[in-house]
Figure 1 (cartoon, one colour):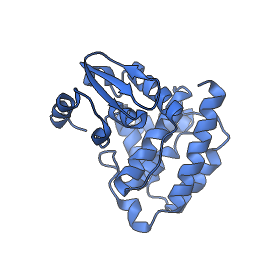
Figure 2 (tube, rainbow, N blue to C red; figure 1 turned 120 degrees about the vertical axis):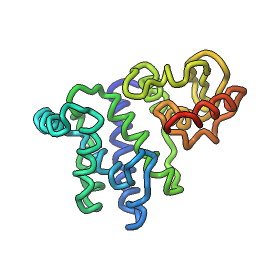
Figure 3 (cartoon, rainbow, N blue to C red; figure 1 turned 180 degrees about the vertical axis):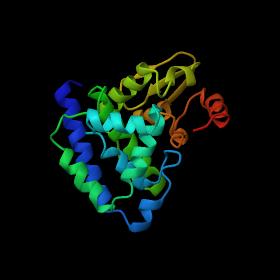
Length: 213
């Protein structure tokens, strides 16, 4: 994907997720998401923070005593106090902008909207298909970036292959599945493991059962 394709996809995904948020019932906002410790409303709140500027980000980091993970968590928790109706409005307001949070590439907003969209819909039993080319682009980014997912280390010994796109990484026991399911696996979400097949699945399942996810 070139830069224009990436941002067109981000815009489309933000707009469609905003529509989905508009459709949520009050009790659905309180459902635990795939992000440990976050409800659906915290995930939605987090996505609206993608335009955070340098100064607000620096203040948030100081409040978190330099702990990045704590900064992300605390910022989402603070933002989640807003009325839920505001999150869809904020997401729509970001459509058309290429602004990013400090120190991230164009690929991080793509990765965020794809994966966090699933964090919301999977526990709710809703369907939100990922665009395969975008999911493959995000999966490659996760595989090559190291921190914070450390996908290469966590999935060492497995060869991952998408069945719906020309994408594969790793060496070892074969694991196949839709690129969206593989992206969730790479980012530490194990809810889609049931969609995976291949000789490596039993070993993968055993490894995941002994790890947090």
